[in-house]
Length: 338
Ligand code: HPA
Ligand code: ZN
Image 1 (cartoon, rainbow, N blue to C red):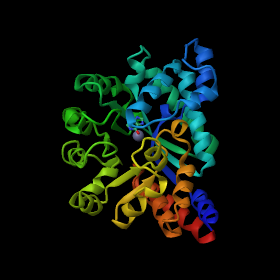
Image 2: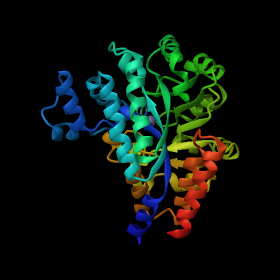
Image 3: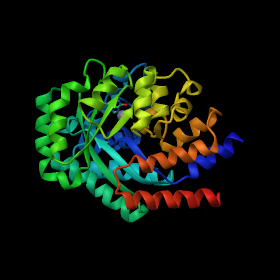
């Protein structure tokens, strides 16, 4: 029964809206790139890397994630990284992906912004040709760095704005509230960019309020802790704010103690436009369908809930209305035939 439900969920055409491309760097590719670029990494084997992926909070993960990203140096590295993700996503019936990248992780090491952007873009073009998988890029500011650094990054992005759909906010949440980036988000809005932010992963409900009211976000990344504030939950539901929820990430980073304690069912029952995403699949134990399957395994969600989640992934995307309508029609046809 559960397997049938998991298979059904996995079969659904879907969008992925919360994926850090640097977080899709599998240990095998990390080793290959370390060798190709002559970058030293503090691990002797792929097994040793995987064994190091034990986290008790967000910062534990971030420390190792930024270290892993050091092997990415050339345009081809970024293309190979993107291609590996898109091949894996296509196998999970992802037909559209809106992916985060962290330019500061690279420009701070002397890698030009253009190297990152052009490499990722080459992978995106290839994915559309090979799989028909469309994608968009979201530039994330690292919130542990200052406002000035974020402004410099936005400036570096200016020549590439035709290939960037929006800006986001990631990295260490606690102690770095959204209001720290009020002005840079306002500038991004003026430039016609969409705005999203990680909030309420570890941070309190007030950070979600700030993301809504000060950053004027179009989409909320994670948002788990919004559930602690019933008025905020009601507001998110009323405004049809999309939440990009990441169940296996929540488990690995101890945002939830057990997958059965994941609030996805509560989110749907509260009328929230929740979606399922993998966040950093190479680090958190799986790609998007592993997340759908993990939820199916809790026995809490129905077939209709999974259709809602897949529908929400398109409704919450930054695709034009006609593309969303096309994807929803294809999803409905798939469900009718299943
Ligand atoms: N949270 C915050 N920052 C991040 C994450 C995350 O889950 N993944 C990559 N950067
Ligand atoms: Zn994330």
